[in-house]
Amino acid sequence: MAEELDGLIDLALKGDKKAIARLITLVENDEEKAKEVIQRVYPLTGKAYVVGVTGPPGSGKSTLLDKLIKLARDEGHRVGVIAVDPTSPFTGGALLGDRLRMQRHSTDPGVFIRSMATRGALGGLAKATNDAIKVLDASGYDLIFVETVGVGQIEVDIVKTADTVVLVTVPGLGDEVQAIKAGLMEVADIFAINKADREGVEMVYLELKMALEFERDKWKELGWEPPIVETTAFTLRGVRPLWEAIKRHMEYMESSGRLRERRTFRAREEVKTIIASSVAKRVEERLAEGEAKELIDEVVERKLDPYSASRIVMEKLKEDLWR
Amino acid sequence: MVDRSKVRVVVAKPGLDGHDRGAKVVARALKEAGYEVIYTGIRQTPEQIVETVVQEDASVLGISILSGAHMVLIPKILRLLEEKGLKPGEDVAVFAGGIIPPDDAEELKKMGVFEVFGPGTPLKAIIEAVDKAVENLKRFGA
Image 1 (tube, helix red, strand yellow):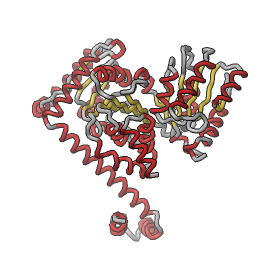
Image 2 (image 1 turned 60 degrees about the vertical axis):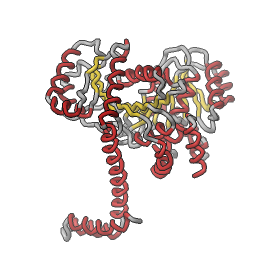
Image 3 (image 1 turned 90 degrees about the vertical axis):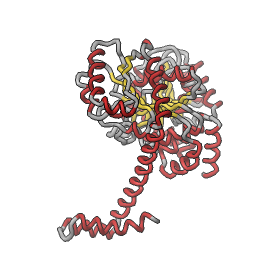
Image 4 (image 1 turned 180 degrees about the horizontal axis):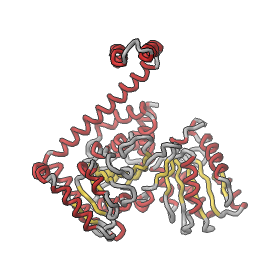
């Protein structure tokens, strides 16, 4: 298996799309393989810039992305795309339909598009999204777009993934802006009001502008106030200004040192997530043992309180963690 | 049985007909059955479809066609898959659906399509046939 993996990685680094696709499947399906793949490709990553595109369902994220890919290709970028759609919590199945808006790029040798299902993750991305980005990064895609599932208010995992976050909204969602203010607003570096040929675009613009006004001091200190760009993806209106805004933000991130800051935060989050999930696994293993079951029984029978019981289990965990 | 939620299926519509009701119903049914389904949309070239199978690392490809061009487009897709090192029946299970006369269906099956589903096929029959075809693929241990 190790040799097979080496072969796949070699091919992927040479740009073989079948090998890249296979590696993404490995990091998606198999924790142990994911570890091996990432350990090997990680030294080759860090060259790609990651742009996240998020926003409510039906706001036109995929269509906008299709147009952005074109502009990025015109400027010579090799573009990777990861488009996330939800897995049904009832059947485990998923219908991934973002790709169909971008299909004209599928035969472009400089574009790699991968659809991804959330498989139970709740933050707007899939668990393996970050690892898939690393595979694309190592394979020479220097600009990677990540499209989240259609989000409401609190699915903000995209900040743990992207260097620049574009929030796409549309007119006519009623109190949408109110909702955005509760969480999504803080993660956006750029706002796009898509479907701007519709009625109500001025209202959305004003509401966003006013919401941003509240944090004027913060923007001053940061040296970046999120621009609001009106777009109509279908007719291309505003798409180029949006692309220019993204590029301006990239430059700002690099020159201000914010990129390093954001990537430090992200690395920390990533390490934390890995520790937390392996600890959680050990805890499950411990609790599945006979000794722990007796302890739980004692808690049920009020012979022991839950805090003392967990203390006892934690003492044992120390050994497990270094196994 | 293979864990369906880790099996990726591409449902594609090659050629110039825009009748996508059937493709969408089948995509939906496979999703409801627990598969991860990627839908390409209409008017796809064989090249686009094969690239999609490659980049999505799909194990199953469903081709819906009602234009009458199936004896041109489907063999071309099969050939392009082979050129990518994806052997129909071994690396990727290919099925077709739409308006395809029985004689042509037989020909297509000889070329590596595992089944051709005409109008009126119960969705359950499609899901069962896909399940079986998946189990015969190399990557799932056949």
